[in-house]
Image 1 (tube, rainbow, N blue to C red):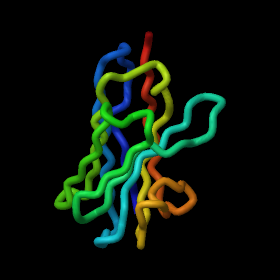
Image 2 (image 1 turned 90 degrees about the vertical axis):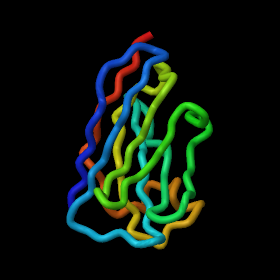
Image 3 (image 1 turned 60 degrees about the horizontal axis):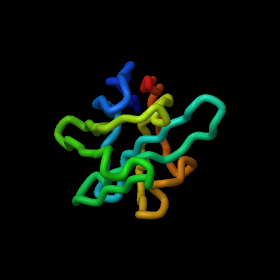
Amino acid sequence: VQLQASGGGLVQAGGSLRLSCAASGLTLGSYSAMGWFRQAPGKEREFVAAIFWSGDRTYYTDSVKGRFSISRDNAKNTVTLQMNSLKPEDTAIYYCAIDKGPATGVTVGIGSRYDYWGQGTLVTVSS
């Protein structure tokens, strides 16, 4: 199983970035979920957003609601995180992850419930 994250970079506050995560080597089911987590320097890893592999359920941490949007492409086994109105506090390494399932609306926010992790991509937002 491989998760390949891409799209990080340096952006000014108020700008946008799009992160993508391509999964290979596994088949995801209806109750699988893909999520994004981030870890800022000196801080613990935190949940950012998640989406189930079927249906339209999405979940976000409060600090990114209204600014970030997660979507998926089942045919390509890809999840995208569109990040708008970026703030310096969004600076972190962003990781994509897969929970094979069965995931729930509660477990999608728990990092230890995820089975596979990507290598991380750095997002830096300058003020």
